[in-house]
Length: 143
Image (cartoon, rainbow, N blue to C red; front, side):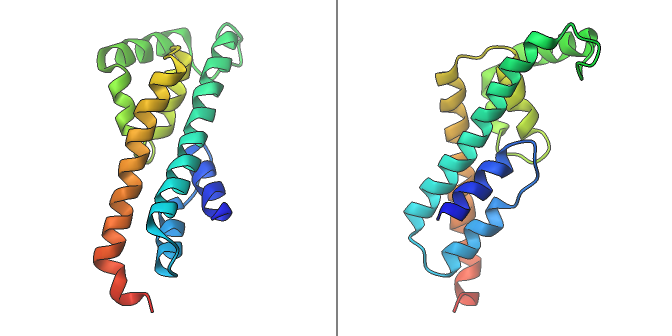
């Protein structure tokens, strides 16, 4: 289970990972479903909250020449973020766009508890779906 937590945590940061595959593998070998869901959700949520923290910290460097976003692109991202709001964190589970959304939540100072609530819902739903699909399609293959 610790391996699942670590894979899920790393998968939620800007580093690549394959937590869904690891979750399905552990489910296939008979680990308890509820425990798997909880561990994967907790690890992935923590990884996303690290992204939020990085976004909060990075904002203080926005005036530096090496900052990865220009003032114009930062203003555009802020407009987009305010348009779609914190509910956009429901997409934090999605590949490619999910990690930047959590960083933006930090950059634009979404309160911690609200970011956490949206992220837990998104990550928990994703892992519940993975486990449901594993139950539907992998069960005959897991011997």
